[in-house]
Length: 329
Image (cartoon, rainbow, N blue to C red; front, top):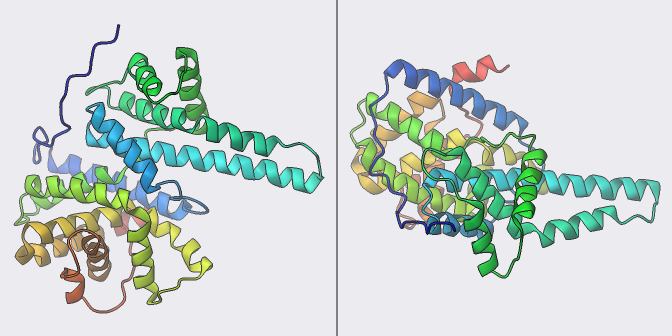
């Protein structure tokens, strides 16, 4: 019989900054910047479409119930997002083939119905897989998962649970250790600490986690407001929306926006210094950082934010470290 999960909040008390050598931090930041640049270049289609509020909220609440650390919940959302995109692409391919061949087969409808019927199971599998990536903390057992599903009225066997995990893994070619914005936030906080930022990294970290939750939960409205601001038009065209997908997948840009917004909440007098450091570290323009932090803050604490102090359209084309960008070309 599975032991009950001991209540333990996923806290930031054990998180330490300044414990790693500067050379190691520099190499890790360079690697993240390269990874981010590649993700931005490859962003297309429906990416970001499945970071829907109700899905994210379900994952966050489930992770909290199972006492998982924050990184697991973000990882689970990203795994679910990639998995759902793969499934949607498969359904579209089947529908296109059948329309082209004018066949009577309803394979795509069957795939759609199967995905709908097993969505909760797949979502929970994404959380369980994410927990296995952070095995040093806690792995959610099959019994815990089955009991949870049963409480919701879904009866599954251990075999079905394993098949569900395997389905997710195969769909993603077993590549589930996906980058999350949290990794970028924590890396930049490390660098800020080494560079003499006036606001302590540990102080910013807790606020960053809260705002990152907010961005995930309000993903669509925040990025919609950012898109409207970037084109200075309240009604973006479909083409403009499609081109904006790369911005949604830019985790370095998201990280600097999160940190800048956190700095404004913690100590607005030091906001300019923090933003200056972020600009120097990442190469992202001051206007872009200000615009993103403004979008985050207006959806959290109101309109009296640093965006008012930075007039002019943002330049969202700015990306992560210039050296890393050059190395990927």
